Image 1 (tube, one colour):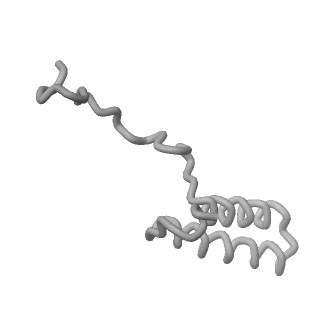
Image 2 (image 1 turned 180 degrees about the vertical axis):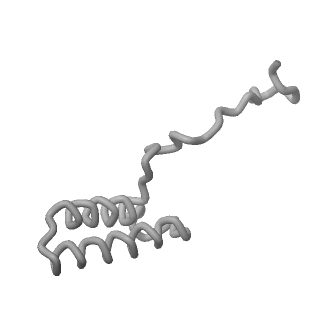
Length: 72
């Protein structure tokens, strides 16, 4: 429940809006592929996940805890 309520950013809102539009158009035009894409985008927006998963795109830190230097 925390994931749905917190951490809102522009990309998350964009996914929800695009998913809602795609789902609506899929229902109106009876296109199942468009409806599935809309559901997928809505789920990604509500669950706050992206294609990379949880911190999949982050760069690992080369800084050791306790030392004041960067590792080569």
